[in-house]
Image (tube, rainbow, N blue to C red; front, side):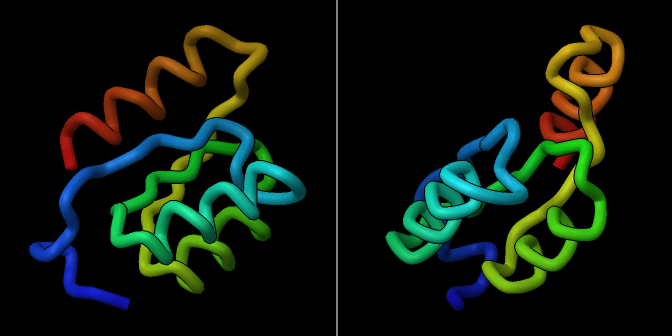
Length: 77
């Protein structure tokens, strides 16, 4: 994977730890984007973030406060 300084853009994928979301993460990472994954599945999210040299934050899309905190963390990166 490329160094973080070489990424052309950063994308945020909510629900990106497994399934279709995880495949979207892999595709975006393979095209040179820095990917931030937000999901409630900590184990899968961390493993995928390591796989694609991305970032993982715990966040629940059904909980505005939880999701807001994850987005704030992403903005601080």
